[in-house]
Amino acid sequence: MLRVAGSLKSGKVNATELTKALQRNGQPTELGKAIIEYGKVYKTKHQLRYISDEIYARQILEQLNKGKARHTLCRHIFYGKKGKLYQTYIDGMEEQLTVLSIVTNAIIYWNTLYLERVIDQMRVEGFDCSEEKINKLSPLLFEHINFVGKYSFRYDPSLENGHLRPLNTD
Image 1 (cartoon, rainbow, N blue to C red):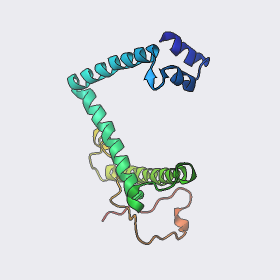
Image 2: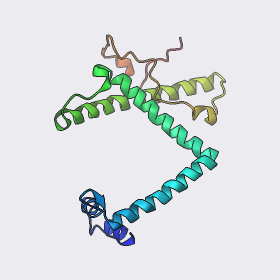
Image 3: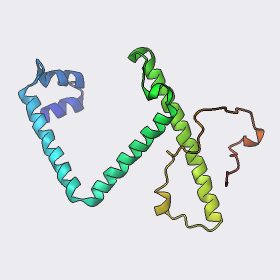
């Protein structure tokens, strides 16, 4: 296994060649079996740490929740055809996913800008905006976004040079 790792790192073998060498006729070779067993050791160590270390488990849960929140936002953006891709893989799927990613990132960016502005305003007004509270905020919220309906793309010169719209405090 050390030779395999060294060969990969030095570039003497690429991942595709290695994958072929780890199995024959759909069955793992002896080297493939060894790597599988080695992986089981790390999986077991992870599982033991997960059940015995509450902080570690909480960190994993927080990351899972962030991933779930992003997927929920994407499902709301990609609401047509129940959020399923109907293009053939090469022809249209990549384009659909790229556009979904661009729109998702634009929403996250917009929300981040305005969350920062809200926090600044709340601090000016004397609210407690400790780092602990701020760390619980997420730019993945979307309840304020109208995904279906009419949109206005009128040019507003007052928004030039990085100026933002006034905060909606209603």
